[in-house]
Image (cartoon, rainbow, N blue to C red; front, side, top):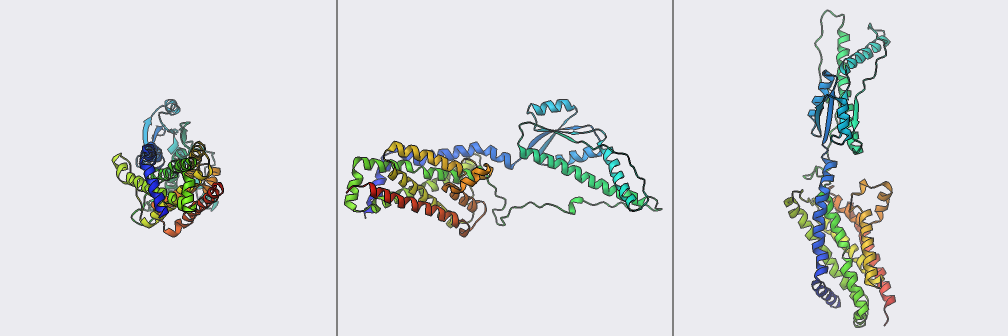
Length: 423
């Protein structure tokens, strides 16, 4: 009964504080919408790579035709033809285009000659009749000029694409030259064998998930909704710690303890009320992800196929956030100390926990440090549930860490509260 009385008291305090209500409910909703909109373009940059590339064709032969055909079929590269290499370099240097590909003169002829020389040398080494060409042929130098501000992954993607096209063309011409030299001297010219090199071996890119959520990737909404939901839940310490310290300063905390005779009813009542508030925050943020984000032109939040796992994770995060708020309120003696330390610590925990940016894009040292942030445990669990369709057993280690964090915080709060209370 004393616990329910404490819950009712906290409810009255909260509804009489418009600023606290806005901080708990309105500000997180606005924050998650703004962050999802702001980060939508960067996430699309990583996932929907689209490069504007200049192409300077000094070859004007079959090799350049192969390169053009391959890039025109690519959804990630938009080729713009130019004739002047100097102008192309200037445009790339100015940031107008991400790169410029320059195909040298006689590239096709030189490649054919080098291919013929290669096959002839192979035949000669096996004692087969062949006209050997010992001339040292120049390397076919395909130049790619990059914008100095281009991201390294874009650079690697474009370079890899050019190298792949050149390798495919070279393989095709090697087979053609091999068939031609084998048919020389025969009375009947055999029918030319043609086949698709891609049918020999291919790389089939798929996602590991084999259910109806296959292909779901981390995007702005899938990252920001759970991330900033946890951030908002940990900021429950503002009203929790503020009311706790205010009651202690006014002497009402001592009177409550004298009535109850124990720390547990007071702390349990506060914990239970704000735990429920955290769950309400979670539901509101999820509703925003499902119903508001599509209305703003963003993708809809996908929750996956494990609602029980989501509930378990949400409860464990709410326990950790509320336990941390109780500890801050008990330990610090003034509201200024509690709120200053609490806000800074929550920002730090969120930053190293992957709330601001995903952990995988952080430096290695921060990726190691992030393992100690409760927000990282919660965010990883939500990613497992939303994106990887994980079972409860897969998220159980992180859930236990969050529950353990909450129990340690609550236990420490009781010890500190008891040591500071004078009967």
